[in-house]
Image 1 (cartoon, helix red, strand yellow):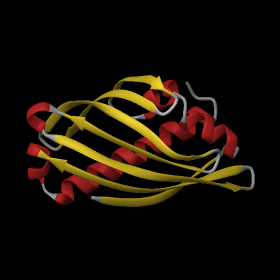
Image 2 (cartoon, one colour):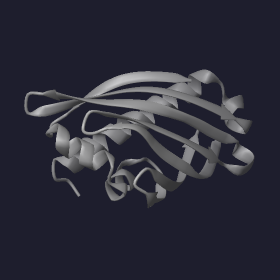
Image 3 (cartoon, helix red, strand yellow):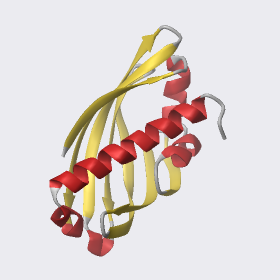
Length: 148
């Protein structure tokens, strides 16, 4: 699965960069995130519970940040295992561009899934992924604008 997009966030680029590197903010914004623990400045451990169609699973895995170019870009990659539901692995290149008093966050995602999740069909996976991304950016933008 590949997904690209961009979102305008009404916050300065430095604030968006800081938030993208803050485990507490990310935990609050990632749909279904139950825990996100900083193991090092570039490594995190995550547990996320999601439901896609009829399949509900709890994934645990590692997240790594690389190609860091603060406050402009980085690559985030990870792999999670969801037991019988399967696995997910992939990464995203994230770029931040100043846009007046806001920031354009552009992303290119490449992901692979296996197990029961892969049997659901690409249409359901793609629409669910877009819904989760929309929810993340709505929560992320609200958080940067002072919402709890």
